[in-house]
Image (cartoon, rainbow, N blue to C red):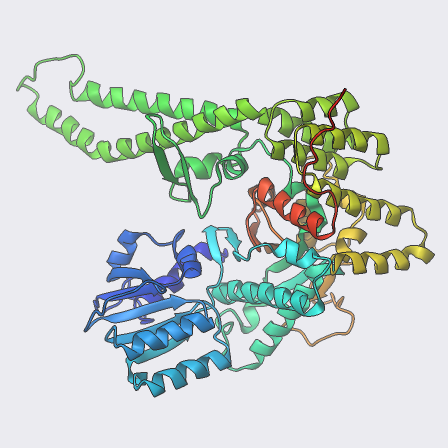
Length: 622
């Protein structure tokens, strides 16, 4: 059974909209009831990529509001609340119930509501004598945003900064790890699977793995648990593997420019929750939706931009040909008079033409949409030389360096300040060792372009630790790790991840290569040291009990802590499709970031460590 996260989450939401009653064959509840939907901002983002207004109408939702807005009473109508379990939301629910805004309250929390909040809810409604208004309280375990069948995000902001903040204490780190593990628990509960967990040792990935493993173990102890339907002896033969990584595992992917359609649209035009706004052809902004209902997006998202342009042209010509064909058959073009002789034949052609019109109209809308998006993209590509950035970064990755003149040429050429900063950071990550004079030349070039180089300084600092670690002998190694731990809080993995991981050899990302090795389940020096946790097995001390966990795995969930992107998602999907038979990989992350958003997080870390600083105006020359 293929894991389809989008479908599973949508089913849960539809069941919730139908007051958690079992649905009939048509996918609606047997009783037609009109109701009101109340949600908070976070849950609005969960609903937005999955459910449209017409779907809400279909399930009897006539009105929908944000919880923090002032609302008028609507009597005799049940209200479905879908909110995060927070103090503010619980207080608002109690206030709504005490004012009898609605006939009955069906409360759905996006994750498990903690005991103290549940008690607040009970005592609050009891005091205001409105406890009879509360029909049901459900924990929905839906605290994640599914963007495509195989792509989800926990929508947890600035995780990378929080985990790598030098001033973060143990408690803050534990809170973040707990939050990430809870989000992953929601995903697994929605899929009703208990995977085998693999991750590199050390750093945030191991911490999340340990907390998640314990959560699953505790939950499996209860008889009536969320995984019973996925349990049983038969299913234990084919369980998926959950591979956890931390952004420092492969830093470069979060920063580099990619020239494929999906990552390009996200990075340049700011695709968010499957929607984006671009300048329309006739002026004004046009808003578009890009998801699995768009056949062109699904088919061509992983192609390089020039191939996409060719494909748009091909589709347009095919569309014109089909329109001409319809016109020819119905005698609409050559102005031929309609003769009554072949009445049946003509009527048949007309019927066919009428039937093919909706499909043709839809195709034309998709073509127009992508023509508009591609035109805007092309403008940005030309203005910022994005094709040249992508190509040169790729070359640097493969060759492990770049000619000095070429490097400075890029930094003094076209592109935004952020493009130049990203390019400079990729140079740092790719170089085997730091060449002091080159670095100074880069810093001077960045200053000339008035670029804030905090992020550059931060990566340079990480890099110097990395290199000194590689050259340090084993005796002094532990001292460096101690020092790094003081400096970076929890980001030891950033320091101990060798330069090898930061380099992506043959365009296959290190992440994809590692996932491939983990799914094969054969002995492999790259992943033999990885931790193995199986929540269904008795606990073993070492975390390496692999005797009962022989691969290969058909399905994997790959999760990136600290921010992911469409480039990694695309790379993993290509790998899965290439396999014989085809494998299934779901990619998730704490938040989906553009290169710019990720570099902004690096900048914050640089500032926290007192590195770099704002732009100093160039000294006047006499």
